Image (tube, rainbow, N blue to C red; front, side, top):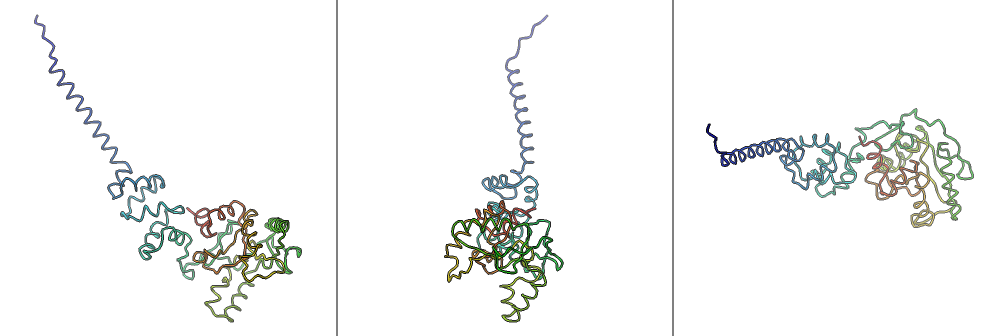
Length: 314
């Protein structure tokens, strides 16, 4: 019987070949799996590694899948980086940017999110009153002729001028606000409150007849598009005082610093006229609840911006 000598060389070659096959197979599998990843697909579309990191950090898997169908545009990631970016508005952002190249990304996001670039006469929408204190009423969103809160009451004359009405649901908040101001030496009263559709229609027509259509449309809401009809928007003024520069008054400064604590916001800020599309009103407040009011105050955004991102985002 002949005993063959073990061939170490052949064994070594076999091991090398086997390991090579295994390594190659692993690489093939790895490459195959990598090609199925979002990172690989995004690279193929044209995004670089830094842009891909932003996309993966900011977007969910389904939105990334949708983004892969969109032609690469360097502005896409710049919009995604924006704090109040809403994915469903991406194509509108890009379109607006193409027509307004010098505008900032932050401003474009605000304009598009709030539909401030939309001509309301052609795109009027119905206010979703189920949102209650967060319902949106503006140039675009309107209430019907029949809408009337079922809890409208006369405001006590101790905190208002005669004839002012408001929703009972916010009366205690108003009383707390006025009481807190009084403790600091400031006396406030309500000078205007709930207004029906018919009342608003009469006011708009009178203003139009006296000053013209354009001025009326800028200063007086059209019937159905006035927040006064909600019963939770009102005018609050210092009692028996008139100021040449009201925003420099101590009363205004106090109200600006404290109204949000009681659930109120300044509905038409001076620096948001391009969003609200209304001239600013110094003493005009609106109830939105303390949570929303605190966010609006800290973020320095308008109610339209809040509504778009926090209430109606999806």
